[in-house]
Image 1 (tube, rainbow, N blue to C red):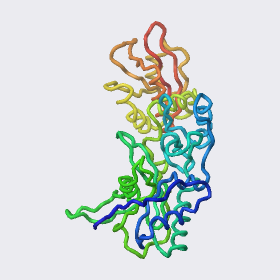
Image 2 (cartoon, rainbow, N blue to C red):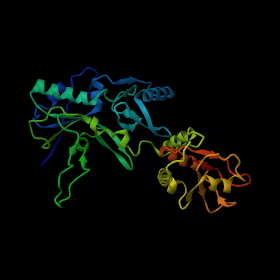
Image 3 (tube, rainbow, N blue to C red):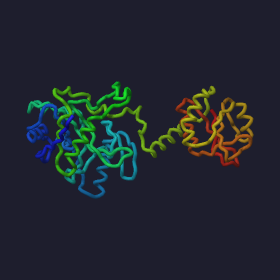
Image 4 (cartoon, rainbow, N blue to C red):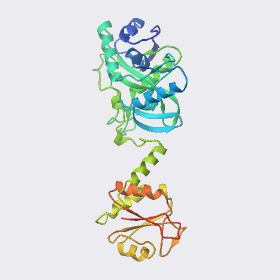
Length: 362
């Protein structure tokens, strides 16, 4: 494969109501079937009127921006100082919901297109109808990435090609079957186009030639397939937000044990899921109701009449015949894990005169 990446100069300033198919087709009469247009989302937003008026400066500007951000946000993922990482209604997770103040008048903010996939389909259709050329269209925008510095362009919308190249089921040169490999090729094309477009060169469109071979596919499923399903998202919150959510969930756990003894295996799994995090090296022991009563009733009044006890053992603080753990809020993490395993708990007070935080009844 031999790829060419070419700029499309001469598009000029885009305003609301402009026909992008005409602007691009006039600036690039050399387009061919099979070309991939990488179009900056900002000019699409401008043409579609996705603009908000704001004061040029001062505290009122920030206040209006905060209101706009709230309206574009469906979920806050992380917040540090003035920075907000949020999920938009499109499903994208990005800083400030993609709201941009660059390459626009100081009294305006640019929002993401309402439906980037629909915008890509409309532009592709317009170029085909007016100029008889069959191209794919990628709507791109700039994002940061978790765990890596720097920005890169990714695809918000696409038409005329699949967003993902699925290699699952293929066999590599060493005879290994690929079981997970799905390449986000439209993100790779968006990043390649950014090498030509730049941020200060007023070059909002790039053409990539050589990747696709005409005739092209139908419009395709769009870029929505790139949004990871929430059930598969292992990092759906920032660290501080996840901790706060866990503690909030723990605070709402039922404060009484179950009517029947829980499945010991479920308890073991719940303990294992958090033990190394909350107390590396600590031993957790389940004991029977009789054992709990014999050990704890003299020092912890009110132990339930019917319960299986979970004695949390920690070497530093002996308390009579057993040892109670000193976890504080980490006990709540354990309660959350137990609740997720279907094990209701009761949080009992520590023996008086000790430094233990609590013990649990199941």
